[in-house]
Image 1 (cartoon, rainbow, N blue to C red):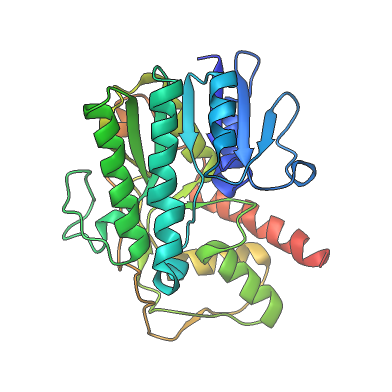
Image 2: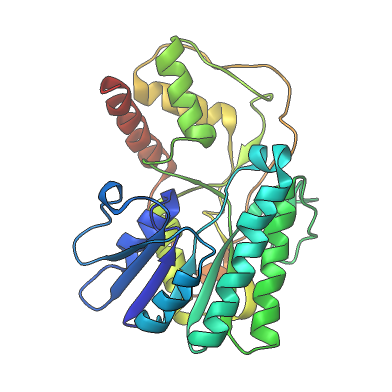
Length: 307
């Protein structure tokens, strides 16, 4: 597995995945719309500035001939998908089809990993959530991720492409300037108090981006890749109230989180993953939640200091 292609390489998870694969034995090619001078993916990483979809992507695939392609490109926002489902569809389903079709034509031996989401489950009927649980998305984002999973299955079953999908639960880490962990730190530092949406009893299975990248590398190299899906998480459930209090402690702020009691549309109530399919390949989470949250809190403080 010498050549690894990462779409959306300049995004939050894309950067972690590039770093996971970028070693002496692997050549990594990143593709994203961001200007190369603003990317800084690291020494030895190749990069092409391309606004996908594009015919230029065909050229990159034909010249680079990837053995692995990790597809991180596309939108990652439930809220934006509710506001503009058409754009979300194009950036998710349309883009994924074109990426798969390019590989089918120009690199048919390439192993493909699609970054899906636990949003496909919606509000699961029981916990922990297995990959076999009913699919019941609550947002266009979740529905579009599910449609992409079906494309992965289609290209695996019909065309023989070695492809799989990973359903990532609540990924976090420094570098992510959105979603709940960043939002808690940002609001607390800006306002000196913390008021959040929901009740605080909502729960998530938080997984650090380094562990997400490690899991994807493991599956990309070792899984059957016959159109199957895998949960990527820690198997641990934490409430938003617990996470808020841990972050406030790491920020050194002696305040209590408040909640407005209104759950945002499209958001599920509780998540905790069953990761037995993933652990069967030897995966173990390596970043304890309190360590990862403290890391993010310190990064948020440094970010606010330079603003």
